[in-house]
Image (tube, rainbow, N blue to C red; front, side, top):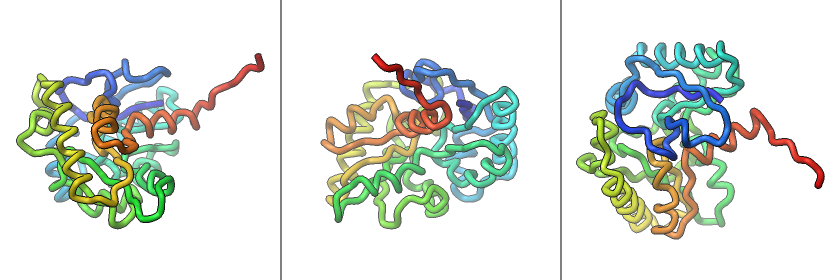
Length: 230
């Protein structure tokens, strides 16, 4: 599996999609040069710059040229590039954790909906959600822009206070669930949220689906496991 990584300097801790230690199977990374968090999340929410898509496609082509059977990314906001990436790379593409929201919705009891937790609620537009086929009416909650987690990622800071990030994730998830009682499961938009998925699930009592879950499923289709008889 190939993984397109944004052009960042913030820490990639175990569980993060962009950390090699997160994966029990071989992965290959390629950096989309110039695809910063500011470009992909903040500026891209208003209008994705053409250079951003070009950089992402170039990284994806490097991965397919190296033999990757499928390509993923480390940013949920790249859902808007799903069709363009799949067409350019001609291999299966999983551009965003948001793509699993439709499947998560299908697992829930009647009347329950998935809730989307994102690094930036004000930047996650209807276009991002439509591109990922997120069910209409799925509520969206975000991290406080002043939080350690959001600032580290969006300002691309070199250090992360992990304990503060964990507490902020739990607080944001609880706020989303409290504001929307119909939420029956959570989908974490941001690939950097994966290390805290277990904490969020424990704190809310709800199934919590991350980019790591999604890409583990994606990889299983690319390279199905073999089973031996006892």
